[in-house]
Image (tube, rainbow, N blue to C red; front, side):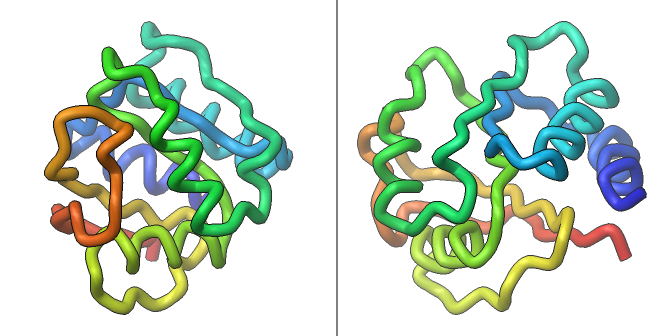
Length: 130
């Protein structure tokens, strides 16, 4: 299973997060649960957001702006093309569509989530399950 492969890769990198957000689709819920179980079983519960299913770039930005500022590291488990568009816009660089279970880790040059905007991120890594 691709999510298990990615969870193991992230675990070896000591990947951490404060909150996982995912769409209500069964595949994203399953992926989010796999990551949660492998990486941070004592963290906050997964937050299902049904509108993250096939969401466009504008709504992704609007959602990110609403993340609580006590959350420093957020994980979005959602769908393409929205996530690829978001990644390209945050980096101001074209990114090919992310394959299933591809993980991109970003450093955002912001102090609060409401400051999210185009070209505010640096790509730390991008990895697919192989």
